[in-house]
Image (cartoon, rainbow, N blue to C red):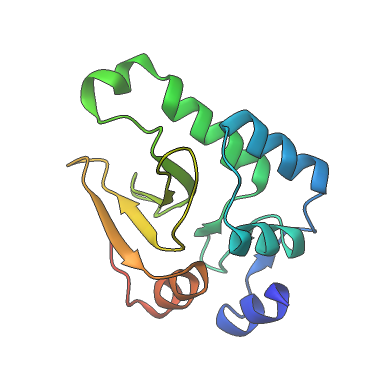
Length: 144
């Protein structure tokens, strides 16, 4: 279902193969949070999405795991930014900013997507769902 939607919204995008359930579970376990159902379903259809102009629209599950662990464990970041424990990054804007879901109380209870600005350390709402994030980012409605 997601593959069809993604190709309709982003003709020419490169879609990864379906994410193996074990890879997804490994990422969730390492990060201590269950991914939102919408993201789980997307990754189950396409483990990573790159637009034809090279934007990493959705990272593969392994990169979600690795990048989040790197942000959370970087000692230099502790001095510069608020904690990243409350964010689950899943994509970047190619300018240093990252797209994320908010983690509250160890769970992701909202489907909203936020952007973290690496220059100001602000965290701002950009879309009410993963589907709208994809639609709005590729249409230019989300500007970062």
